[in-house]
Image (tube, rainbow, N blue to C red; front, side, top):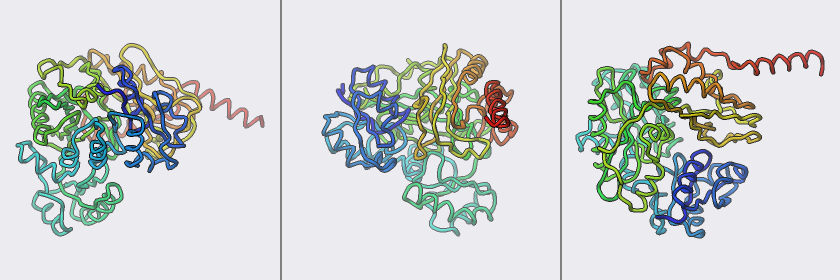
Length: 472
């Protein structure tokens, strides 16, 4: 087993990895920028090293990260998610330095990171893929011709994309003409590659992803699925496990296909195979994320497996100590991404100082967070400041517990997505438990909520108004 692991990430992601390291008796090394000097992941790690002054580029400085890992005698690096987690060059540099990379091989990252190459690999493996272009589109004329053949709507996607970025839906020829160059520019800006491809748009699909885990000895299993259909602008907001839309037969079939997809690229470590499922329960491969997912806690909740610990053990060369037949689903789980964003203002980020913070607790409630009273949320990173995961033996009880936990959660100083989630969780639409990617569009009333739902918020606002009127 490893003795010291460098965590090449920040925030709640780094804290999550540090906790599993501690339980395995492994020292952790955090990296941070000057702006993150007071961040919680710096305080939680056994050692912490200043990586540089730039708040973003420093976390992407491959050369510096490798130097720190080497100088401190780290025998492994965990990339977390975001930043360099799906960068094949980073994985290659780590392994070339004689350090274990806690993730898949560089070749698997490249194969599945390029969406057109991934499609080709999946077709060769007999995995169903959404109808679309054979590779990157060469011109607008080619895109128009293919769209006429497939029929609208279609999706333009960045070939090197991921995380819901670089995607444009085109409902007719006019929108395709308008969006073609826009998507290419977005792809170049976000991923350094302007290649785009086209897929048939599956209208209002269910976004279902299967967690896979493979060791270095040829064993590969899936840990069931997560339903990630509640989104805005292709960005996930709320995830559940398992999906209430899948039955046991479809779950088993999709799980087998997910394992086949991983084996097709000789995948090792944790990964996620993402599918689109239509109303008739036909499913197609969408992409594979070659890293730990933000929403992994709900899989841990319903399977009892520590995915980060399993990642570390697999990277250390240990075989999986369980088989597919050993895995069972236990109850239901929901994850809410608590973002420092204002849903009432088009979900714009709201960086600033946390003036009050109180997290919920109790049976079946888990919080993965990185903020505290007095902490200043920087404007340079992802706006997520915490994740709330609730578990229950049945779906109705899980929803009830979610409502209770969301009501207890109190974050002041910045606007967050908490009021929106309270409104959604209490709705009949949500308690129904079956979602597709057009859920919020189909229920616009869920976005119509009062920003200040708490009595103490109202009281504070009234007191402030009285004080202002009195000139105090």
